[in-house]
Length: 224
Image (cartoon, rainbow, N blue to C red):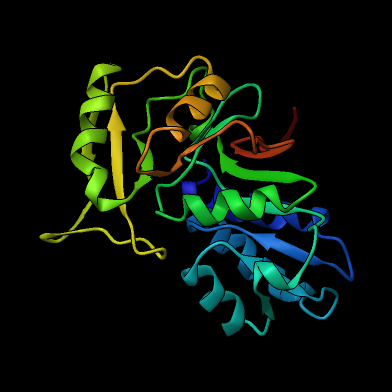
């Protein structure tokens, strides 16, 4: 039986076939993506570079000799490769466990194809088992917690030690439990309109077209 870490390594390597030679690749954030970044180092002379969704991924890419471009320096990207905290049967995801959801959604929107890499534990029928991350402007935190309560959810401010977690954008994160998100597109559109919400971690508008799923039987390709 393969470990979760080995499954992540498998899908990270499998994602290389979606990298387009001579292009700039969009790169996400997280432990699974770190496996992809490590594998991408072997192709660093075949690509122009990457657009990264977080400071952590940028540092890892640069340490491996891969040039990182600002998103504003480039046009449309051929592919964006990122992980997910959950993915359903239509390619909709919950993302943001690593607190990079806003930049992840920006790079995903800039890309023609979203390839999700994940191990089989991330596959669900209905989104909501994993706490939903929501990046928020700090002054709106209390009101947004109450709004999620009205939906039947429990929202808690993500902490780092005794202080609120601060994202790469200088904002805070709410993690919301107790939700069953059966209509991801409708839910994402609704919460995105709440004043003070920077980004909700439901990826339905920017859903995956492909998921490379690491399983005990090997990597399974799901097309949506």
